[in-house]
Image 1: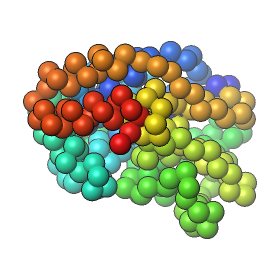
Image 2: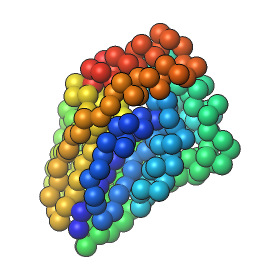
Image 3: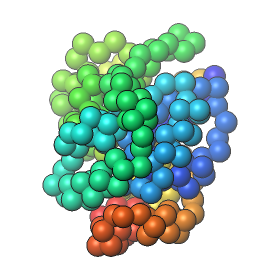
Image 4: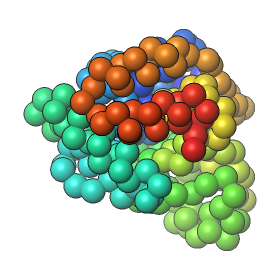
Length: 231
């Protein structure tokens, strides 16, 4: 059994389409929209591709018209992208995003999976970066019933084992921030976990951004993030 896990696509269609790995099941950890130029197409692709999706903080912000809860570093970019994305998505698409679950549990071949955007408990704003302490992860996993937990949000790949639970962040498909400007995702296959990267047409995404109403200074910053894999 092979399971593909994607996260943090952020309207980057070229990056999403570059992932051609075949799998028995596919799950998405949220943040399908914002920052990128193609929110509708990405939402359609993810809806058709996946067996389950959880809601990310940007999906929540766009669909419910609330703050993204982003770090100060990315707040202006998020707000500019939010204006654009809200103008592109229709009511049905926003309603769909607004009603996605914040956590998802499933069992596959006897292995218990938990999917969430930010924290195992469903806090979509919580940042659990690769350098998170053992104690904090233990606290976050207290009361969690799963063998493997997949979380996103940080845009940073991570595989950590805390006692009997493996915690995995697949990194970001559409806006990696660990210095590797390629689409990042995770594969679980018969108990083995791997983080994978694929190159994509960054210039196609940049061109798409240039065709939006996102202010030029923010397009410039987003372009730098895409080309350098973070800022």
